[in-house]
Structure formats: structure tokens, C-alpha cells
Length: 148
Image (cartoon, rainbow, N blue to C red; front, side, top):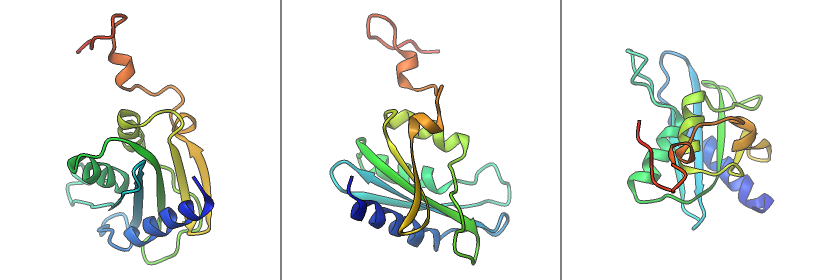
């Protein structure tokens, strides 16, 4: 992926962050998920007073993409920080979001942790979840699925 594509993805994540609904944590997060066919799905965090029903920006983007038939992803940009302020540092995804990424993406999936559209830290999904549990863990030796 070229630098200009990464900058555009980070810009989309920063824009998505503006839509965050975070009246409890006051921590706004935006995500932009790039499909291999070039489509981009954005998401923001949406909180609930009951906390548990809250949804992270990354999962919002994945759910939007999957609900529209997308399954082949190349990268995601994530930008987060205190509401009303520009992000100052990398904001890594939570464990639940990493698990969703493991469901749909391979170990080389690119994760851009952005604080500006031209400044980010790039890591692979393998680096974020080195011993992750994904669909491959449920396969039997004969290639069939083992359901728990």
C-alpha cells in the first residue's frame, strides 16, 4: 500500500472520529477499513449508559463492511483520543476488536494507529495478537470445522 493511500485512510479515520458518541468516556475513536477492492468503510465508537452495549469504532466499520458483503480486507486506520482534542498518540484496538480482526483478516493485515493524517504507527495483526484464536483454530486435520 502506498503512502498516499495510507494518508487517505488515516484522514478517513480522523473524520469518522468526529461522529463518535462518547458522553461517558469522552474518548472519541474513528476507524477506516480498507477492502482489497478499494472500498472504505468507516466507523466511530458508540457508547451506551449501560456500558456493555457500547461498540468500538473498529467493530462498527467491520460490521458495516460485512453487512454489505465485504470479506477481503487490506488495512484499517484507527485514530483516538480525548473528545474535543486532536489525537496525540497511537490508539491501539481493544482485545474484542483484535478478535474481530482475527475473524476476517490474516496475520499480515495492516493496522495504522494514527494521530494525524500524515503520522501513524503501522503494525501487523500478528504483532497485535501474536497468539490469537481465529477460524483456523477450529479446523480439524481433514479440513472440516470442529464446533465447540
